[in-house]
Length: 419
Image (cartoon, rainbow, N blue to C red; front, top):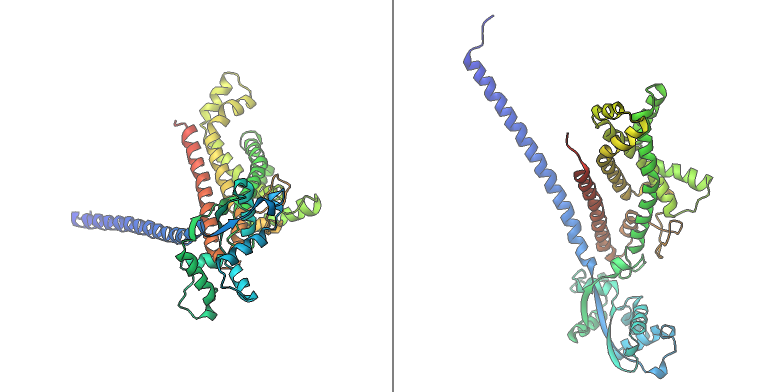
């Protein structure tokens, strides 16, 4: 057989190097494109969310005397007091129609905010004070430049008179933008200038608590039994195949299961973190079992043999030696599974957690919704101001998920042992 010439070998070597360079270049381009798409997406969401974190407030003068107030400050007719102060600021407004248009510059919740201000500061009674109250969402959008005054009046959310009144307030330095604390401290509302995520965030935390409470111990015990104790036969093989299949089942199927079992059969209360957490626990359980089994299998056999060699029982080997060494992988898989559950909406839709809930839940049996469902509800609202609120809620949810993933990485690095 004729040996290949050095020239042919050198040519093959050059082609191999060129192929490796092209493959490396394809990898760099793929990473660059993925990073560019991700940065563009996150940047667009973050830029869209900026207006939601500030709100416009209107400063009005109040001169309330003690003789005109009831003993309980909050029992006064604050709507009438607010209207009087607003009309005094615009004495030229006479007709009923113009007064209604003027009143629409203030938020529906302005009277409640005024009552809380005076209740928190009783010294305001008897002196002239200026109180800043939330403006309506249309007023706020105009100040933020989202409403173009050059458009015809029929194409704008604000009339020419309302824009003139806004200009007068701005000329008198009675308009200012402040941090929108209600986004974090208030529950849901039909009015975008009053809506917040606190109720949905508490509902998410309660739901995740129930999910973790049920899925973590059951998942770890199932993984220990299948990996360390159960005999290898057709029955355990069938169980392992079904667990792997359940990890790939669409999440809405677990919602249907929860609706049939927890609500229709066990008669648990609908739209509560208890039911939502149980449904998400079913969905998370296969992920935790698979991750825990992989972590247990990664422990070197020499650990088991050494423990058995010094007289430890099977249970002592598992609890005192194998489980502590597998704990980083188990915790990582658990937190990633819980983070995935925290972003789910479809299974919770089936058990009624996609609902308009104003009150903040106090326990796992109160009516509640979750942050992903809140985002879905806001995204379907017609008011334009809900666009920035939706983006803000998405950013908060992403921060929550990134925190959970960072926690998983930190736990792995802290408890991981190198062999």
